[in-house]
Image 1 (cartoon, rainbow, N blue to C red):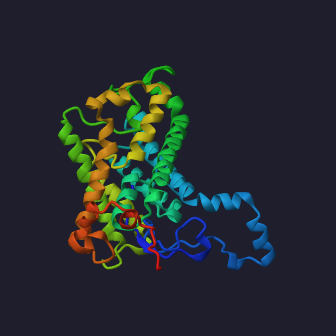
Image 2: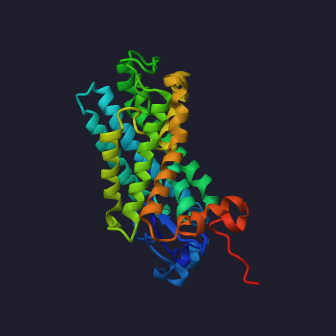
Image 3: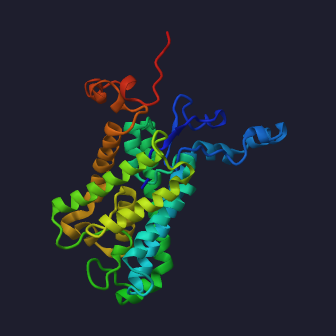
Length: 339
């Protein structure tokens, strides 16, 4: 759910998994994250030995994917976990505000875990960063897939942890329902209130996603007050605020990975076709609306407040690119030949 992610020059030792000409966009704040131990800290023999470790090379190559996977994993552990506790206890172990706190904590801790990749934790946030902050487009599918898989893994863990309570709440080990008073499908993904229209559903997710990206860029803008090293804490209050003020109607998914991944897991666990059809096939809205909302939120911030490097701060607000479908124009990592 998470980004400006101030841009930080990539250290030379990280070139194995980052373009040297591209600055990493960080949701974790305007500070860079150093590796626990750099090659400068190792003696020659240790460095040699480390270079020969296949797993070290593989980890370096896939570090962004691992970072987004585990960051989103932690986000969903706390998010789905708090919903499970509130629902299965019948409100005795928490209430709606508890859910808002839980999701806020999940985002904060997830960003701490996923800080090496920028802590996006949300495909729509990654998409906005590709448009406005120079995040490499080639990394978008890697980030998105890692985020979805992390969410799926976490929801499966939550299900395993609460399976006995789910059996009791639903009325039996083979009963899994959607939309009833004893249904537990809402632990894993969002469902709209029954009075919501299709337009209202989309607009609710759009507005919440717009707020998300607009405030993320504000907190990560070095030209503004900025959150700096307190970015994860700022995100905690941002997510809590969105949930407390805009979350009731649709459950404030604002994140394809957070909703689609656990929804797919719940379908695999036996909740049935209703996970897709409930709410007039609502499932596609939290998959699509966050991309529109986060893009619009980033656009608003850059048009009216941001003075740094952005397509908005170029002639015609970068719209001329729409008529120049070339890699040299659209790629965030393309380096023109000096010849």
